[in-house]
Image (cartoon, rainbow, N blue to C red; front, side, top):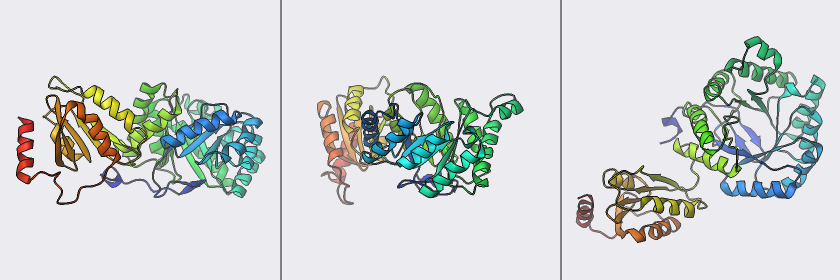
Length: 380
């Protein structure tokens, strides 16, 4: 499946954050945000490197003070991925962050005061050729917009976003990325759909204040996934209260579930039932841990019984279909060998590590008749 089989992706302007493209025909990028004090350079760099190893493509840091803004200069020397400075209220922090080497600024033009201050930020961003993310959030809407609608709603988020766009464009600045985040999933989806119908700026998707791992994963999969399936979105961040590495992992899982990105091993496994006759739970847990840092784009099926197991295993790059204390190993739809239960993990890991495609005539060493007989014996 490709993106056109879901929904034609909305064509947006292409914006560059450092070397990373957002929008246009660029792959949907996965972002995260550090949880450290930005002024603590060592701790912040350590966390960013962990995120880089997980596949994170853009990182955002909080800039609440001048020390944090200045720290960007040293942080940038030690990381590979583009860095976004998250600034609120004090325009001077945005100026310092730009001068220190930030690749993008996240700010709401409307919350940093008079227009002359906004003009200085936009002017310096233009000089340094870096984009701006207008980040509208349901928790920090302007008072006059809240008074107009009487409550937080999708229409209010869109009006606030359009106001900030107008401010930027009045100064001739349109190197912009947009986000309209809400903790209410339905409101978040409605907001993005409305703004996507009105503008062609690239969109950064996310459900804000989504909670701890389980709640955040569910909310983000629904909110971000629904929009991506509509063809809306150019970059994503899954917000999780906890380890930011989990944000990246969940982000890629959402994209992989829609066949929008490939990043590492994708494991398919059955929910199991009373037909299970192998210790599938332990097998999957061990395999998941051991392939976590293998960045090959493979689909691996680990199935528990003969009902759907052989079919799913055939469809994957590598597949294990379990029987009674045994399993059949499939490679690109062809049976390779029968395994004892205690062989499954090591053989599968070895096949993943040494992956190479079968030739058209390679049937795993079996004759066609032997392959058919083995399959028949397996499903009895």
